[in-house]
Image (cartoon, rainbow, N blue to C red; front, side, top):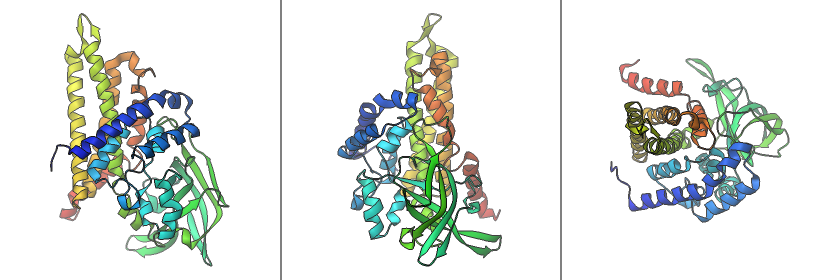
Length: 387
């Protein structure tokens, strides 16, 4: 594994960093204080992102994306992650790569418009009664002739207010297993405006202002079989094939924010004077900075190794869980310590630190809680012993 960046990788990092600093940072205060990402602003920045070649950069070249390898993609994600979440996720969208499972007809209707910034997608798995245990979902679709009729509720559905359609996972049957009945899951593509499909305002969230979660309700929502993504009863297989690297994406965006917070802490410690000297010279501050830098590097190395192994087809579930777990917990620690170093000013919204601190909290919950990641890691450690 080469720890240096290639010329192309450095160019992508520099281009993305410049875009974030010039096009996203200037709008953070507005989005943070209003809690709203204006539709006109979204379209304006998206257009610039398309022109800069940064939009849908996670997608393969053959469908109009940048065709980045996993490591390069995560370097790009790290730079984007430094900005307010609504700005970097909605305005420089990375369509779900599960859309690569679309049929040719579905690609024309869903995949390609997402890559051209003409449409946005969202994913709907979580329900009020099921979080990490997706097999316990109650939403279901029943076959009715050539159609399927969906009923149920999804919540915590990120950016569903912006999305033009949802990728919805629901139960479509049941099979017997040694551990008892297990639900069979199917993914559907559901357009906004479909009768029986309602998007409602979600919960007020301490993290990621302007990036909203919504509630999706399905009441006898009728869909033709052509709206199935993948195969009937094979929803988890489709998700497993295309969604594995999302934990690494979360890890990388967290690394970006942690690096930004650490940068503020270092600058402040070097400039701020108390008792006749820079506060960075006090052991209480200097040791904090050393620990922050060390933990950030450890998290980045875990993430880069997992990305490299992903492209070698040698990555394990534990590799990705370790990266996600470490990066999210390191972000929380660095955000907290950066505020401590700044004192009262760290909590004021003149700086991005209080926002980074708030936003850090959700990262240990979505895309698999820290507890789930530890379970995955320990399971892989114990498996060779039959435990």
